[in-house]
Amino acid sequence: MVQLLIASLAGCTALDRDASREASAAATEPLVHHYGLGTSPTAMELAAWDRDVRPDGLGLPSGSGTVPRGESLYEKQCQHCHGAEGQGGPFDRLAGRIPADAFPFIEDPNAPRTIGSYWPYATTIFDYVLRAMPMERPGSLTNEEVYSLTAYLLFLNELVDRDVLLDATSLAAIRMPARDRFTRDDRVGGGDIR
Ligand code: HEC
Image 1 (cartoon, rainbow, N blue to C red):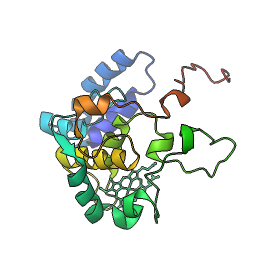
Image 2: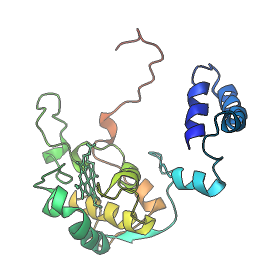
Image 3: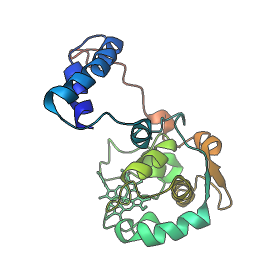
């Protein structure tokens, strides 16, 4: 991985992204030989890192999960940090909607930012939990387990029924209450402040 990092850093100054990518690929081999660092990643090694999920669901793997399975995983692996049913800590509160799905975060910075009150995309739960949780063992959960945990977190936020079967299609189809509260940042330059 080290030579990849060096190659991509070396490519950062190039204006054209495609040209930069080609340059990075071309630069990888000589760097390995020149500095003797690492080895070229195999397709399997790259696939193990290439697990990101986009807001529209692109990248979601096959498999599915259920609320009861997610509940039992949550109690064993998440509850000691996030509290029973996603509330009470000691760390981030994960559940709770704001009445009428209001969005009071500017007027009230202490309003609870939970999945149900703040997150614009349900697919982000899958992406985040897969790569970052549980905090002591990130990356240890299977895709099926992450689908089940995502189903349970959505259930706690009253966004799916208890009997949902969550998979790539049903997860990407969920419209979050805060979805329209965010706008795409399409600014292109430093002075372009709105
Ligand atoms: C050892 C404590 C710990 C455990 C165990 C843990 N988490 Fe977390 N979790 C955290 C902390 C701390 C954060 C905040 C991380 C940050 O802000 O960078 C967090 C953040 C999150 C968030 C994002 C919250 C937000 O609104 O930004 C989600 C979702 C989440 N955890 C889900 C889970 C799930 C699901 C599990 C069980 C598989 C789990 N966590 C286990 C400590 C933990």
